[in-house]
Image (cartoon, rainbow, N blue to C red; front, side, top):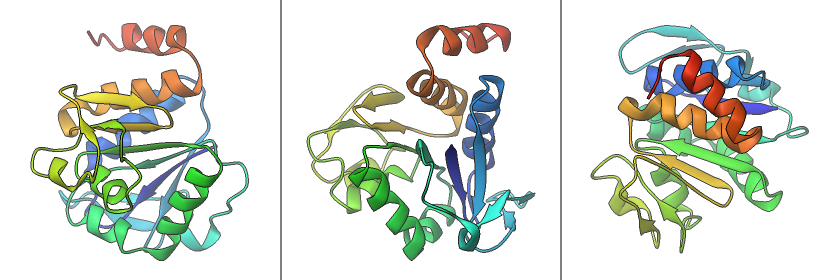
Length: 179
C-alpha cells in the first residue's frame, strides 16, 4: 500500500497527479489527512482524505509520498506521526517520495546525505549533504525527489515505475499523451 500524506496548505497537483498515475497503474494508494479527513490545499480546494493520521497503521507500507506546498510542507514536518512514518520507512527499506519543498523534510533529517536529490529552487539548500541533481525528477535508491508542480505527472510515473516496472509506467505515459 502507498500512503500519501495531506496537510493543510499542500500543493494540489503534487498530490493528485501521483494518485492518478498510481491508480491508473493499479497500485493501491490511500490519502492520509494529518489534521483530519477534510484538508485544504494551498489554493483553497478542500479534499477528503481516505483516512486520518489517527487511523494510520504502519503495516503494509510499500511507499510514502510527501507533496509540497506551503504551509503544507511545514505542517507535514511538524507532525510527529509523519516523522515516525518516515523513520519507519527508512528503517524498513520502503520507498520515500517527496516533491517541491517536501524533500527539505528529508534533508532536515539527514536522510539525503550522499544521495542524488532535487527540490524546488531555494529548498535545495535544505537537502543537507545531498548531491544536487539537475533533473526534475530523480530516484536514488529508495528516495524519489522532484522539483515542483510542473513535473507532478513525471513524479507520479517515476513512483509507478519503482513500484511496478518501466513498461507499466510507459504505458500510462502513452495513454495520457505525455511526452
